[in-house]
Structure formats: C-alpha cells, structure tokens
Image (cartoon, rainbow over all chains, first blue to last red; front, side):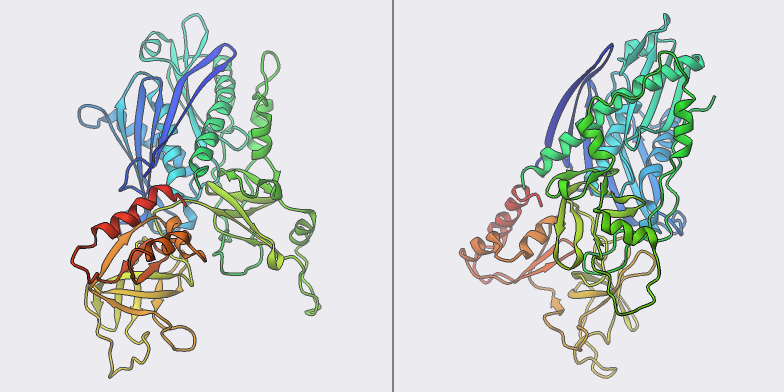
Length: 224
Length: 304
C-alpha cells in the first residue's frame, strides 16, 4: 500500500510545535496503521478490528477496545500499563462501539524513538490508525503536551530535556468537536490558573494538528 | 474548579447509517453533550483567557455545520456536521404521524454508510469522499477505504467453509463472526438430496440476515428459489484478498481494469464484497503469478 507522508510545522505565537509528519497505511496485515513523528519522537500504531472476541472478553452491548503499548527496549512495565489505560479511555470516548457489539478492537503501539512528548505522539498515532482502519468515530482527537518551566513559561511539545527541567508536564487529549477535553494527565505540581493557561494553549495547538489530519487524509484520497 | 470533560457519547437507541441498499426512515442519533463543556468554558474566567483561536476559520466552519451539498465530492472527517436543506429538517423535527396514508413523504433522505443522523443534520463517522445521489429523495454516503469487512444484508460474498455442524455450515467471511449457511439453502436441495460441500470449499452466496445483534446468515438462492450464479465454487482456482474499495471499483460498469486484463487472456472471476476475488484455474502452463501480479499491482494505484 502506498504510504502518504504529510509534514507540517506549527508556530503558534509564543508556543511552537515541532515538525510533525505522518504515514498512513504502511503495514499490510493490520486493518489500519499509522506512523506519527513529532520532532524526533516516533510511534507506529496498528489497529485490528472489529474482529472476533474471546468469550471472556466480549461485551454484550459494545466493542471491547484493547490497547498494547510496547516500549523501544525492555518489557512493558507499570508506566506502559498506565499509558495504555489512558489511551484506552480516550479511544473509547470517540469510537462508536455500539455499532459493533461482541467484537474486539485491538490497538498496538510500538515506540520507535522517544525524544519527549511520547504520550501525545501515541495519542496522535492512535487517532490516525483509527482513521485509516475506517472504524466509526464520533469525533477525532489529538494529544498535546505542555511543560511548565520553573519561571512559569509554557512550552508546547517539549523535548526530553525540557521535560526533565520542567516543574510540571501536562498532557491533554482534545476532541475535534468544540475542542473538548477527553483526558488530562499531570506529572509534577502546578496551580489551577497555570493548568487553565496550559489548556488554552493546548486547544490552540489542537487546531493546527486537526488541520494537519485533514491535509493528510485529503492527500491520501486525492489519488482517486 | 472543574476541567470541562467531554461526556462519552450516549448509546444511541437507533443504529444510524443503515446499508446503502436498504431504504429506512431517518434515525434519531444521540445528541452530543454540550452543556457541561459550555459551563466549563465560561468558568475559565476573565483576564488573559482567550477563546480557542478561530484563525483556521474555514476549517472550523467546515467542521461545525457546513451545507451537505457544498461538500459533495470532498474529503470529510469524523466529527464533521453536515447541514441538510430546510425541508428535510421540517420533516424530522416535527415527527408528526401522518393519518392519511395517501400522501407519501416527498423527500425521504437516505443516510448511507459513514453517516449518522444527529440533531441538526448528519454526523460524519468515517473519513472519505462524500457522495450524493439525487434520485428518489436523495441519498448521502461516504466512500471510504477499508480492509475489514462488516456483513451487510444483501451483499454477495465469498465464504470459506470451516465447520460442518449437522445441518448448518459455518463460513468464514472475513467479519467478526462466522456466518451460518443451511444445507437447504441451495437450489434443488432437499433432505434426501444434500449438496456436496466439504470443509475448505469456497461458496458464493448472499446475506439474508446481517446486523450487529445477530449472527450473519447466508443463502445460495435468491427469493424465487433460483441460484442465479450463487453456489459452491469448489476447491480449484485462486483466491485473492484485496481492499473493499478495489472490489467496488471492479464492480462498477465498464471497469477499465477488467477490460484491459481480459485482453491478455480470457478468465472467469467471482468478486465477493468482502474483499475476496476468485479466479478460475488457469489452463496455461505458466502459473497464476503473472495474473496475480497484474491485479495486485493495480491495488496501490487504484486507492478506492
């Protein structure tokens, strides 16, 4: 399958996003696949579904969504498990699972390189894989990471070094419908006003990412 | 202080987006929960707060309620809301029962695959190109690329027999469940005259029952009892798995691919809507690989 590569760079006033690019449909076996690159962080996502579910795991009224996150080296640990939970809850909020009861949808993410903002890269790759597989979705979502520096400045899409030096790192999953927040996770401490400022900055950045999604899909369908 | 959280979409009581072939009334979808988010947004308070930049104005307008006619032939993404012309809305908003059976509803809009009826208009649920057919009240649907097949009533598919369980065969059709096929669902089959079906055979049939709640059921006869091309294909020949969009392209009238391939040498094809193509066994000395390469080489060029 031809792989579409789309690239974008965002400069949003004082907050910059790193250069990001995406490839759709690059794996032949999964029903949907996507590779998402943010700066030097890259994640490969493969989606299988709706497929037959094991009797023990099937749900009678909706699809059972399962997420597996594989780190670049080593075995998956507690950190991967917690990220899988966050991804699963985010995906379940947008996938219309009621249209496929008693089926299983499996999302497998492989970290290819980690240079900061890994969770938001995973979220973006997951959304692109859902788009590629043709699963029914009620909205799209994107992930944005904010780092709060000790002096109070907000950095979007931080590198690994900026994340280490920051006072707090917040990751938001933002839906395309009216930019609602689907998931927030915080590491570190910050005040309520700072969190609201980070949220506003993330929602502005989400506009750029959704426009990038639209351009990638448009490029993919422009060949017909 | 509460961060505005999006409510998970409530389970719609009516399944939206029926099969393209089936004509049904407009279904009421779920209404996205908006009130919680609005309250949270205003709670962000005064000061340096800014609303999310509407800078990408065209993109936002396209997402929140663009007219359906304007987007026909363009790429739409999940979450886009398509507004319908006024007379469709009046029909659905009132939902009045018509006591006189004589007056037929003039415009009954068909909501095809990839779309769901939701409040003000149609909500797009799959990414793809928006298509419109004006005949018979109008129909909108989304042409999307997919590899995984979901059974739809009336589709003709190629199934592989996996289990012979008494009076019923189980077929793998590429969906989430195996389909069932009764031994009496063949032309001229009786309890004494059973069809000769082995495990591993290919069968070309159509779905009579295919919805999300029940196990799909297939038959190899049409409504008048004739086979009309359906039945056991056998164990010879070659089976290819391709994307669903390529099958739809091949089934279009005057398909150039079929015409060009038929100029190479004659062949017989069976196309299943579940992405499977069967080709008759080749009687020439060289094997199927040039033919298969020819067809699979079209796959990346013909995306849909």
